[in-house]
Image 1 (cartoon, rainbow, N blue to C red):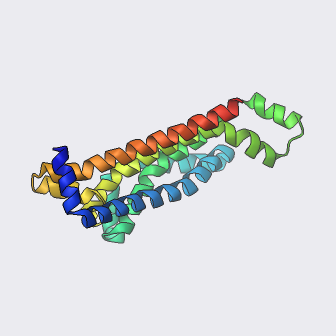
Image 2: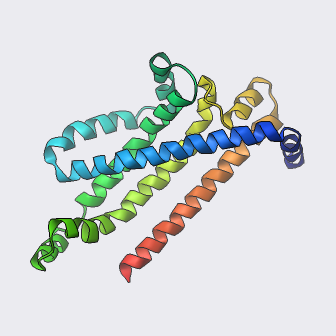
Length: 212
């Protein structure tokens, strides 16, 4: 089977490369945007009680919606193609990162913050030098989970013309072609594993740096 997969990729190299690039681009742009949006939202919820309830209600509602539902909802709003798939994946990944960021800041020991204030540190210094590093492990955990969800969920972009490796999976299912199915699924699984291991190493490095 593996030989057939390699053979298929070699004979359809241009098509496979285009699909791989689209999948990586879709996943990469989504994660950059979700980090830029979700981390500040999580911090806002932790710092401002007036924003906590409304934002967390929306986040919890999004958390229970499967990405396929979000993709279907995007159809009448944005049509088909790359953009609606990106927005759907963005909405899928936001909740876990918001929740983990919020939890990371909320779970900081008040005694640590009191000690920092007692040392005469400014609010800005306390935030960047004390709170953010302490919250980082949970934030990174959220990013790891979100990244895996996005990489896997990007497969469903094919259903609305978003392209990516999901095209092989969808066509493989439609034609009962196991080789084509594996051509799409194996690279997705490989990318997810590599990203997860890479982020785990970053997380371990930061944790070791904080302990030292």
